[in-house]
Image 1 (cartoon, helix red, strand yellow):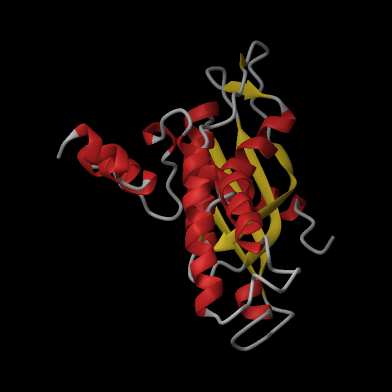
Image 2: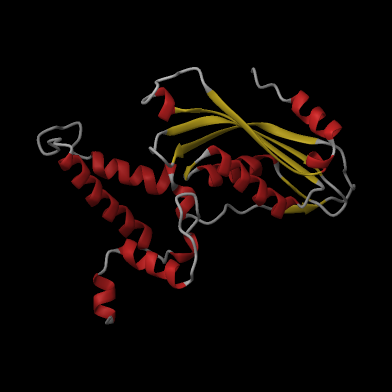
Length: 232
């Protein structure tokens, strides 16, 4: 294929080709920022806008004369690329890590952190709260309180299922902090149940990931879980 043919390809095809050449995954909850070149996010947003306009046309919505939906495709494309799915297209936020100078080794709990995601099955909202438990050691890194929320937002701003989302969060924190133990608990409402299907407004999902000392020590696990106020 000539360079001219390549530049005439949709930007999504060029990004996909780079990912496939690198033999990397590009599932809904994967970050693909490393394969996006300067200026391509804007082009991708424009491409998505065009495809969404086609979806609205197939839904028999008159976007020409309906002032409410005239710019809907543009708004939704911008929302997907720059807001609700931005964790796919942007690199991880910078996080300053500090050495554990005082050799802190007591239980730390961060939360609840408000999280927002989208179900990868129906692209409906997932709204919930996240708690993080850490058992640092003398070799651990310490990060600022706000950075936990920034990292959670980066992970959650992708189409997800909740079970995989908190596993990703746990792996990221293990890499950043290197604690003896890590626990992540998430409680969330799933609008694919509220808005469609059974239309059950009461059911929530609560799940957890335990690593290291939280997995091995039942007393530590009980202490952590007892300190979470899930009813708040």
